[in-house]
Length: 187
Image (cartoon, rainbow, N blue to C red; front, top):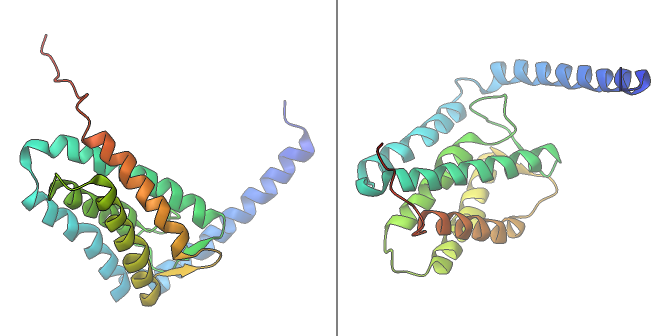
């Protein structure tokens, strides 16, 4: 074995403690969260924005826009998981207890708000849209979920999120508005 026995045993002990904590959290989740009004609210927030977007999307741009949505989802879930794991914030009413991120926010609200902003008024500056996106996300969305008790700031401030949301919007907007997409060729 390449890993020293003492290191392997220490890793095993930490893993067992994590599994035990996860099992306690899952029991808590099934007893207090699952099927509560908060859980149903989260499920609705995870579905309704996508239904709305699907109905009113620019159909010719669906694939490009979904690439943007997937990019927003990937970035936000990655950053959200890191923040939760570092103890910067915590979520209390997750629809699924196996991920350290808030699914209605990361999988639905953030990407759909992005998609709506990209589609409407395409001639408005992406920087202005990014600032608007960031204001909605950092100063309306996050405090709203905090007020509901779904989100608890521990070592974080909404002002820290503001430039991050701007950066995410600008990066993904440049991806979906790029002229470098090439048509697939049939053989």
